[in-house]
Length: 441
Image 1 (cartoon, rainbow, N blue to C red):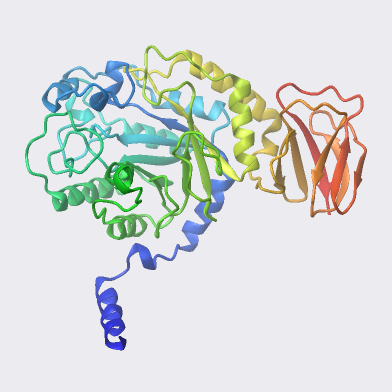
Image 2: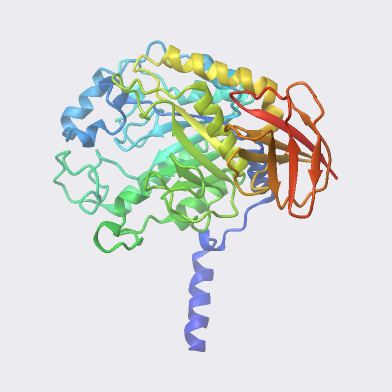
Protein backbone atom coordinates (compact mmCIF):
# COMPACT_ATOMS: atom_id res chain seq x y z
CA UNK A 1 0.00 0.00 0.00
CA UNK A 2 2.84 2.39 0.87
CA UNK A 3 4.48 1.74 -2.50
CA UNK A 4 1.14 2.49 -4.22
CA UNK A 5 0.81 5.89 -2.56
CA UNK A 6 4.45 6.72 -3.31
CA UNK A 7 3.81 5.93 -6.97
CA UNK A 8 0.62 8.03 -6.92
CA UNK A 9 2.47 11.02 -5.48
CA UNK A 10 5.22 10.63 -8.10
CA UNK A 11 2.69 10.51 -10.96
CA UNK A 12 0.84 13.56 -9.62
CA UNK A 13 4.08 15.52 -9.32
CA UNK A 14 5.13 14.58 -12.85
CA UNK A 15 1.84 15.85 -14.27
CA UNK A 16 2.43 19.33 -12.84
CA UNK A 17 -0.15 21.74 -11.39
CA UNK A 18 -3.73 20.55 -11.90
CA UNK A 19 -7.12 21.89 -10.92
CA UNK A 20 -7.14 19.48 -7.95
CA UNK A 21 -4.03 21.23 -6.60
CA UNK A 22 -5.29 24.69 -7.48
CA UNK A 23 -4.52 27.44 -5.01
CA UNK A 24 -6.02 30.78 -6.07
CA UNK A 25 -3.62 33.70 -6.36
CA UNK A 26 -4.01 36.87 -4.34
CA UNK A 27 -5.23 38.53 -7.55
CA UNK A 28 -7.90 35.84 -7.96
CA UNK A 29 -9.04 36.22 -4.35
CA UNK A 30 -9.28 39.98 -4.84
CA UNK A 31 -11.30 39.39 -8.03
CA UNK A 32 -13.69 37.15 -6.10
CA UNK A 33 -14.33 39.91 -3.55
CA UNK A 34 -14.82 42.49 -6.29
CA UNK A 35 -17.24 40.11 -8.02
CA UNK A 36 -19.28 39.79 -4.82
CA UNK A 37 -19.28 43.56 -4.42
CA UNK A 38 -20.55 44.22 -7.96
CA UNK A 39 -23.79 42.30 -7.36
CA UNK A 40 -25.49 43.06 -10.72
CA UNK A 41 -24.49 42.11 -14.26
CA UNK A 42 -25.80 41.79 -17.81
CA UNK A 43 -25.86 38.46 -19.65
CA UNK A 44 -25.91 38.76 -23.47
CA UNK A 45 -27.12 35.82 -25.58
CA UNK A 46 -26.53 36.64 -29.23
CA UNK A 47 -25.14 35.07 -32.37
CA UNK A 48 -26.11 33.45 -35.68
CA UNK A 49 -29.10 31.80 -33.97
CA UNK A 50 -30.63 35.26 -33.45
CA UNK A 51 -31.50 35.40 -37.16
CA UNK A 52 -34.15 32.69 -36.74
CA UNK A 53 -35.88 34.54 -33.87
CA UNK A 54 -36.62 31.33 -31.97
CA UNK A 55 -34.09 31.27 -29.15
CA UNK A 56 -30.56 29.94 -28.89
CA UNK A 57 -31.61 26.24 -28.87
CA UNK A 58 -33.36 26.41 -32.26
CA UNK A 59 -30.77 24.21 -34.03
CA UNK A 60 -31.40 21.17 -31.85
CA UNK A 61 -35.06 21.94 -31.10
CA UNK A 62 -35.87 21.95 -34.83
CA UNK A 63 -33.30 19.26 -35.75
CA UNK A 64 -31.69 21.54 -38.31
CA UNK A 65 -28.88 19.80 -40.19
CA UNK A 66 -25.41 21.27 -39.89
CA UNK A 67 -25.16 22.10 -43.60
CA UNK A 68 -28.50 23.89 -43.58
CA UNK A 69 -27.86 25.71 -40.31
CA UNK A 70 -24.52 27.04 -41.47
CA UNK A 71 -26.30 28.98 -44.21
CA UNK A 72 -26.88 31.49 -41.42
CA UNK A 73 -23.27 32.49 -41.99
CA UNK A 74 -24.38 34.06 -45.27
CA UNK A 75 -27.30 35.87 -43.63
CA UNK A 76 -26.11 37.12 -40.23
CA UNK A 77 -25.21 40.79 -40.75
CA UNK A 78 -25.61 42.86 -37.57
CA UNK A 79 -24.97 46.25 -39.16
CA UNK A 80 -26.60 48.09 -36.23
CA UNK A 81 -24.31 46.52 -33.59
CA UNK A 82 -22.90 49.27 -31.38
CA UNK A 83 -20.73 48.21 -28.45
CA UNK A 84 -21.07 51.61 -26.80
CA UNK A 85 -24.87 51.32 -26.73
CA UNK A 86 -24.72 47.82 -25.21
CA UNK A 87 -22.30 48.83 -22.47
CA UNK A 88 -24.14 52.09 -21.80
CA UNK A 89 -27.44 50.19 -21.41
CA UNK A 90 -25.78 47.96 -18.83
CA UNK A 91 -24.24 50.90 -17.01
CA UNK A 92 -27.52 52.84 -17.00
CA UNK A 93 -29.15 49.83 -15.36
CA UNK A 94 -26.62 49.93 -12.55
CA UNK A 95 -24.85 46.79 -13.78
CA UNK A 96 -21.16 46.40 -13.05
CA UNK A 97 -20.20 43.58 -15.42
CA UNK A 98 -21.19 41.93 -18.69
CA UNK A 99 -21.09 38.22 -19.51
CA UNK A 100 -21.05 37.83 -23.29
CA UNK A 101 -21.71 34.71 -25.34
CA UNK A 102 -18.52 34.07 -27.29
CA UNK A 103 -19.66 30.63 -28.51
CA UNK A 104 -22.98 28.94 -27.80
CA UNK A 105 -23.99 25.29 -28.36
CA UNK A 106 -24.32 25.77 -32.12
CA UNK A 107 -20.56 26.36 -32.19
CA UNK A 108 -20.71 29.79 -33.89
CA UNK A 109 -17.87 32.02 -32.66
CA UNK A 110 -18.54 35.73 -32.12
CA UNK A 111 -14.87 36.65 -32.55
CA UNK A 112 -12.18 36.25 -35.19
CA UNK A 113 -11.02 32.83 -34.06
CA UNK A 114 -8.26 31.17 -36.05
CA UNK A 115 -9.57 27.71 -35.11
CA UNK A 116 -12.70 27.67 -37.31
CA UNK A 117 -14.36 29.45 -40.23
CA UNK A 118 -17.79 29.11 -38.52
CA UNK A 119 -17.44 32.63 -37.10
CA UNK A 120 -18.71 36.16 -37.37
CA UNK A 121 -15.81 37.42 -39.47
CA UNK A 122 -16.91 35.01 -42.22
CA UNK A 123 -20.40 36.57 -42.37
CA UNK A 124 -21.38 39.56 -44.55
CA UNK A 125 -20.71 41.67 -41.44
CA UNK A 126 -17.10 40.53 -41.52
CA UNK A 127 -15.99 42.06 -38.23
CA UNK A 128 -15.02 40.81 -34.78
CA UNK A 129 -17.63 42.08 -32.28
CA UNK A 130 -15.74 40.98 -29.16
CA UNK A 131 -12.87 43.40 -29.80
CA UNK A 132 -14.99 46.59 -29.69
CA UNK A 133 -17.10 45.19 -26.84
CA UNK A 134 -13.99 44.49 -24.76
CA UNK A 135 -12.58 47.92 -25.57
CA UNK A 136 -15.84 49.64 -24.58
CA UNK A 137 -16.18 47.64 -21.35
CA UNK A 138 -12.65 48.63 -20.37
CA UNK A 139 -13.34 52.28 -21.29
CA UNK A 140 -16.54 52.50 -19.24
CA UNK A 141 -15.22 50.52 -16.28
CA UNK A 142 -17.44 47.48 -16.80
CA UNK A 143 -15.89 44.07 -16.11
CA UNK A 144 -16.10 41.61 -19.00
CA UNK A 145 -16.83 37.91 -18.48
CA UNK A 146 -16.98 35.44 -21.37
CA UNK A 147 -19.50 32.62 -21.75
CA UNK A 148 -18.08 29.58 -23.56
CA UNK A 149 -20.03 26.45 -24.52
CA UNK A 150 -18.38 23.12 -23.78
CA UNK A 151 -20.68 21.22 -26.13
CA UNK A 152 -21.03 21.75 -29.87
CA UNK A 153 -23.91 20.73 -32.16
CA UNK A 154 -21.96 21.43 -35.36
CA UNK A 155 -18.48 19.94 -34.94
CA UNK A 156 -17.79 16.33 -35.86
CA UNK A 157 -15.00 15.90 -33.32
CA UNK A 158 -17.33 16.64 -30.38
CA UNK A 159 -18.46 13.36 -28.82
CA UNK A 160 -22.07 13.87 -29.90
CA UNK A 161 -22.99 10.18 -29.86
CA UNK A 162 -22.95 10.18 -26.05
CA UNK A 163 -24.43 13.66 -25.71
CA UNK A 164 -28.07 14.30 -24.86
CA UNK A 165 -28.64 17.14 -27.31
CA UNK A 166 -27.92 17.87 -30.96
CA UNK A 167 -28.90 14.36 -32.04
CA UNK A 168 -30.75 15.50 -35.16
CA UNK A 169 -28.11 17.69 -36.78
CA UNK A 170 -27.01 15.04 -39.28
CA UNK A 171 -23.47 14.28 -38.11
CA UNK A 172 -22.22 10.80 -39.00
CA UNK A 173 -18.41 11.07 -38.89
CA UNK A 174 -16.37 9.51 -36.08
CA UNK A 175 -15.64 11.93 -33.27
CA UNK A 176 -12.14 12.85 -32.09
CA UNK A 177 -12.35 13.90 -28.45
CA UNK A 178 -8.68 14.76 -28.01
CA UNK A 179 -8.85 17.02 -31.06
CA UNK A 180 -11.96 18.70 -29.65
CA UNK A 181 -10.27 19.38 -26.30
CA UNK A 182 -7.27 20.84 -28.14
CA UNK A 183 -9.64 23.02 -30.18
CA UNK A 184 -11.30 24.40 -27.03
CA UNK A 185 -7.95 25.10 -25.36
CA UNK A 186 -6.76 26.94 -28.47
CA UNK A 187 -9.93 29.08 -28.55
CA UNK A 188 -9.72 29.86 -24.84
CA UNK A 189 -6.09 30.89 -25.32
CA UNK A 190 -7.22 33.35 -27.99
CA UNK A 191 -9.92 34.79 -25.76
CA UNK A 192 -7.55 35.24 -22.83
CA UNK A 193 -4.69 36.63 -24.93
CA UNK A 194 -6.21 39.03 -27.45
CA UNK A 195 -8.92 40.96 -25.59
CA UNK A 196 -7.32 42.44 -22.49
CA UNK A 197 -8.27 41.62 -18.94
CA UNK A 198 -11.14 39.13 -18.65
CA UNK A 199 -13.09 38.89 -15.40
CA UNK A 200 -14.11 35.27 -15.78
CA UNK A 201 -14.94 32.34 -18.04
CA UNK A 202 -18.55 31.10 -17.77
CA UNK A 203 -18.71 27.49 -18.98
CA UNK A 204 -21.93 25.74 -19.97
CA UNK A 205 -22.84 22.33 -21.42
CA UNK A 206 -21.25 19.85 -19.00
CA UNK A 207 -24.73 18.42 -18.38
CA UNK A 208 -24.85 17.19 -22.01
CA UNK A 209 -22.60 14.29 -21.03
CA UNK A 210 -24.08 13.23 -17.68
CA UNK A 211 -25.34 9.69 -17.01
CA UNK A 212 -28.19 10.80 -14.75
CA UNK A 213 -30.93 9.99 -17.27
CA UNK A 214 -30.07 6.30 -16.88
CA UNK A 215 -29.09 5.69 -13.28
CA UNK A 216 -29.34 9.07 -11.57
CA UNK A 217 -25.54 9.14 -11.44
CA UNK A 218 -23.85 12.53 -11.73
CA UNK A 219 -20.78 11.02 -13.34
CA UNK A 220 -19.79 12.46 -16.72
CA UNK A 221 -19.56 10.11 -19.70
CA UNK A 222 -16.41 11.91 -20.89
CA UNK A 223 -13.26 13.40 -19.43
CA UNK A 224 -13.60 17.15 -19.91
CA UNK A 225 -9.91 17.70 -19.02
CA UNK A 226 -10.90 20.38 -16.54
CA UNK A 227 -7.57 20.11 -14.75
CA UNK A 228 -5.81 21.18 -17.95
CA UNK A 229 -8.43 23.74 -19.05
CA UNK A 230 -8.77 25.44 -15.66
CA UNK A 231 -4.99 25.49 -15.15
CA UNK A 232 -4.60 27.05 -18.60
CA UNK A 233 -7.05 29.84 -17.76
CA UNK A 234 -5.41 30.59 -14.42
CA UNK A 235 -1.97 30.57 -16.03
CA UNK A 236 -2.95 32.99 -18.81
CA UNK A 237 -4.84 35.35 -16.46
CA UNK A 238 -4.45 34.40 -12.77
CA UNK A 239 -7.19 36.80 -11.67
CA UNK A 240 -9.69 35.35 -14.18
CA UNK A 241 -12.47 33.49 -12.38
CA UNK A 242 -13.72 30.11 -13.58
CA UNK A 243 -17.37 29.10 -13.25
CA UNK A 244 -19.21 26.13 -14.71
CA UNK A 245 -22.97 25.83 -15.14
CA UNK A 246 -22.93 22.07 -14.57
CA UNK A 247 -25.70 22.25 -11.93
CA UNK A 248 -23.43 20.41 -9.48
CA UNK A 249 -21.43 21.50 -6.45
CA UNK A 250 -18.27 23.34 -7.57
CA UNK A 251 -15.43 21.22 -8.90
CA UNK A 252 -11.76 21.75 -8.00
CA UNK A 253 -10.34 24.78 -9.78
CA UNK A 254 -13.61 26.76 -9.95
CA UNK A 255 -13.87 30.24 -8.46
CA UNK A 256 -17.61 30.97 -8.39
CA UNK A 257 -20.87 29.01 -8.43
CA UNK A 258 -23.86 29.85 -10.57
CA UNK A 259 -27.53 28.91 -10.35
CA UNK A 260 -29.63 28.92 -13.52
CA UNK A 261 -33.06 30.59 -13.22
CA UNK A 262 -33.18 29.87 -9.49
CA UNK A 263 -32.11 31.58 -6.30
CA UNK A 264 -29.41 29.75 -4.32
CA UNK A 265 -30.99 27.07 -2.17
CA UNK A 266 -34.13 26.83 -4.30
CA UNK A 267 -34.87 24.34 -7.06
CA UNK A 268 -38.03 25.38 -8.88
CA UNK A 269 -36.55 24.59 -12.31
CA UNK A 270 -34.75 21.30 -11.68
CA UNK A 271 -31.41 23.02 -12.32
CA UNK A 272 -30.76 24.41 -8.85
CA UNK A 273 -30.48 21.40 -6.59
CA UNK A 274 -26.75 21.70 -5.93
CA UNK A 275 -25.63 22.50 -2.41
CA UNK A 276 -24.46 26.06 -1.81
CA UNK A 277 -20.69 26.43 -1.60
CA UNK A 278 -18.51 29.02 0.12
CA UNK A 279 -17.51 30.45 -3.27
CA UNK A 280 -19.04 33.67 -4.65
CA UNK A 281 -22.56 32.95 -5.94
CA UNK A 282 -24.56 34.09 -8.95
CA UNK A 283 -28.08 33.61 -10.30
CA UNK A 284 -28.74 34.05 -14.02
CA UNK A 285 -32.23 34.89 -15.27
CA UNK A 286 -34.01 36.16 -18.38
CA UNK A 287 -36.06 39.32 -18.94
CA UNK A 288 -38.79 37.22 -20.56
CA UNK A 289 -38.70 33.42 -20.88
CA UNK A 290 -35.97 33.22 -23.53
CA UNK A 291 -32.22 33.66 -23.53
CA UNK A 292 -31.65 34.26 -27.24
CA UNK A 293 -33.87 36.57 -29.30
CA UNK A 294 -37.37 35.08 -29.54
CA UNK A 295 -39.73 37.13 -31.66
CA UNK A 296 -42.88 35.59 -30.13
CA UNK A 297 -41.89 35.77 -26.45
CA UNK A 298 -43.48 38.82 -24.86
CA UNK A 299 -43.66 37.51 -21.29
CA UNK A 300 -41.47 40.30 -19.97
CA UNK A 301 -40.80 40.61 -16.27
CA UNK A 302 -41.80 43.90 -14.68
CA UNK A 303 -39.40 46.37 -13.09
CA UNK A 304 -40.74 45.32 -9.70
CA UNK A 305 -40.13 41.61 -10.41
CA UNK A 306 -36.56 42.31 -11.47
CA UNK A 307 -35.77 44.50 -8.47
CA UNK A 308 -37.22 41.85 -6.16
CA UNK A 309 -35.07 39.24 -7.89
CA UNK A 310 -32.00 41.42 -7.33
CA UNK A 311 -32.88 41.96 -3.66
CA UNK A 312 -33.57 38.25 -3.17
CA UNK A 313 -30.15 37.44 -4.61
CA UNK A 314 -28.30 40.04 -2.55
CA UNK A 315 -30.05 38.88 0.62
CA UNK A 316 -28.82 35.37 -0.14
CA UNK A 317 -25.28 36.67 -0.75
CA UNK A 318 -25.46 36.18 -4.53
CA UNK A 319 -25.10 38.28 -7.68
CA UNK A 320 -27.90 38.76 -10.19
CA UNK A 321 -26.96 38.22 -13.86
CA UNK A 322 -29.86 39.47 -15.98
CA UNK A 323 -30.01 38.44 -19.62
CA UNK A 324 -30.85 40.32 -22.80
CA UNK A 325 -31.12 38.71 -26.24
CA UNK A 326 -30.35 41.38 -28.85
CA UNK A 327 -32.08 41.24 -32.22
CA UNK A 328 -30.15 39.88 -35.22
CA UNK A 329 -29.30 43.41 -36.35
CA UNK A 330 -27.38 43.90 -33.09
CA UNK A 331 -29.90 46.12 -31.29
CA UNK A 332 -31.15 45.33 -27.78
CA UNK A 333 -34.95 45.47 -27.85
CA UNK A 334 -36.15 48.96 -26.84
CA UNK A 335 -38.58 47.56 -24.25
CA UNK A 336 -35.64 45.83 -22.55
CA UNK A 337 -33.53 48.99 -22.57
CA UNK A 338 -36.45 50.93 -21.07
CA UNK A 339 -36.95 48.39 -18.29
CA UNK A 340 -33.23 48.30 -17.53
CA UNK A 341 -33.13 52.10 -17.28
CA UNK A 342 -35.97 52.04 -14.73
CA UNK A 343 -34.12 49.44 -12.67
CA UNK A 344 -31.11 51.75 -12.91
CA UNK A 345 -33.15 54.68 -11.60
CA UNK A 346 -33.98 52.62 -8.51
CA UNK A 347 -30.34 51.60 -8.10
CA UNK A 348 -29.22 55.25 -8.18
CA UNK A 349 -31.31 55.87 -5.06
CA UNK A 350 -31.00 52.56 -3.23
CA UNK A 351 -27.87 50.97 -4.68
CA UNK A 352 -26.00 51.39 -1.39
CA UNK A 353 -28.25 48.66 0.03
CA UNK A 354 -27.08 46.28 -2.74
CA UNK A 355 -23.53 47.08 -3.91
CA UNK A 356 -20.76 45.75 -1.68
CA UNK A 357 -23.19 44.05 0.67
CA UNK A 358 -23.26 40.51 2.01
CA UNK A 359 -26.31 38.39 2.75
CA UNK A 360 -27.49 35.53 4.92
CA UNK A 361 -27.56 37.76 8.02
CA UNK A 362 -30.74 35.99 9.12
CA UNK A 363 -33.01 33.50 7.39
CA UNK A 364 -35.35 34.80 4.72
CA UNK A 365 -38.48 36.22 6.34
CA UNK A 366 -42.10 36.50 5.22
CA UNK A 367 -41.58 40.25 4.84
CA UNK A 368 -38.26 40.08 2.97
CA UNK A 369 -34.50 39.89 3.50
CA UNK A 370 -31.48 41.67 4.96
CA UNK A 371 -28.27 42.84 3.32
CA UNK A 372 -25.25 43.96 5.31
CA UNK A 373 -22.33 46.33 4.77
CA UNK A 374 -19.86 47.62 7.35
CA UNK A 375 -21.88 48.86 10.34
CA UNK A 376 -25.23 48.99 8.55
CA UNK A 377 -27.93 46.38 7.99
CA UNK A 378 -30.55 46.98 5.31
CA UNK A 379 -33.92 45.35 5.93
CA UNK A 380 -35.72 45.05 2.58
CA UNK A 381 -39.48 44.79 3.14
CA UNK A 382 -40.60 43.56 -0.29
CA UNK A 383 -43.78 41.73 0.75
CA UNK A 384 -46.94 43.13 2.29
CA UNK A 385 -47.11 43.02 6.07
CA UNK A 386 -50.30 42.67 8.08
CA UNK A 387 -49.04 44.40 11.22
CA UNK A 388 -47.21 47.73 11.76
CA UNK A 389 -43.85 46.12 12.60
CA UNK A 390 -41.37 43.52 11.41
CA UNK A 391 -39.40 41.04 13.49
CA UNK A 392 -35.79 40.06 12.91
CA UNK A 393 -35.24 36.77 14.76
CA UNK A 394 -31.91 35.91 16.41
CA UNK A 395 -30.09 38.98 15.17
CA UNK A 396 -26.54 38.72 16.51
CA UNK A 397 -25.60 42.38 16.04
CA UNK A 398 -26.62 45.07 18.53
CA UNK A 399 -28.84 47.71 16.88
CA UNK A 400 -28.23 51.31 17.96
CA UNK A 401 -30.47 53.18 15.47
CA UNK A 402 -33.16 52.52 12.85
CA UNK A 403 -34.43 54.79 10.05
CA UNK A 404 -36.05 54.68 6.63
CA UNK A 405 -33.42 54.74 3.89
CA UNK A 406 -35.71 56.85 1.69
CA UNK A 407 -35.86 59.98 3.84
CA UNK A 408 -34.08 59.25 7.11
CA UNK A 409 -37.27 59.06 9.21
CA UNK A 410 -36.24 57.59 12.57
CA UNK A 411 -38.00 54.40 13.67
CA UNK A 412 -38.58 52.93 17.09
CA UNK A 413 -37.22 49.46 17.78
CA UNK A 414 -36.86 46.93 20.58
CA UNK A 415 -34.14 44.31 20.78
CA UNK A 416 -34.06 41.18 22.93
CA UNK A 417 -31.95 38.04 22.79
CA UNK A 418 -34.60 36.32 20.68
CA UNK A 419 -35.62 39.01 18.22
CA UNK A 420 -35.43 42.62 17.14
CA UNK A 421 -38.71 44.41 16.43
CA UNK A 422 -38.82 47.45 14.15
CA UNK A 423 -41.99 49.51 14.53
CA UNK A 424 -43.56 50.97 11.36
CA UNK A 425 -46.55 52.84 12.75
CA UNK A 426 -47.55 55.63 10.35
CA UNK A 427 -44.99 54.60 7.73
CA UNK A 428 -46.25 54.64 4.14
CA UNK A 429 -44.88 51.40 2.74
CA UNK A 430 -43.16 51.48 -0.64
CA UNK A 431 -44.83 49.04 -3.03
CA UNK A 432 -41.41 48.26 -4.54
CA UNK A 433 -39.24 47.91 -1.43
CA UNK A 434 -39.36 49.66 1.93
CA UNK A 435 -35.74 49.72 3.06
CA UNK A 436 -34.87 50.20 6.72
CA UNK A 437 -31.32 51.14 7.71
CA UNK A 438 -30.18 49.62 10.96
CA UNK A 439 -27.00 50.99 12.48
CA UNK A 440 -25.16 48.36 14.50
CA UNK A 441 -22.28 48.21 16.94
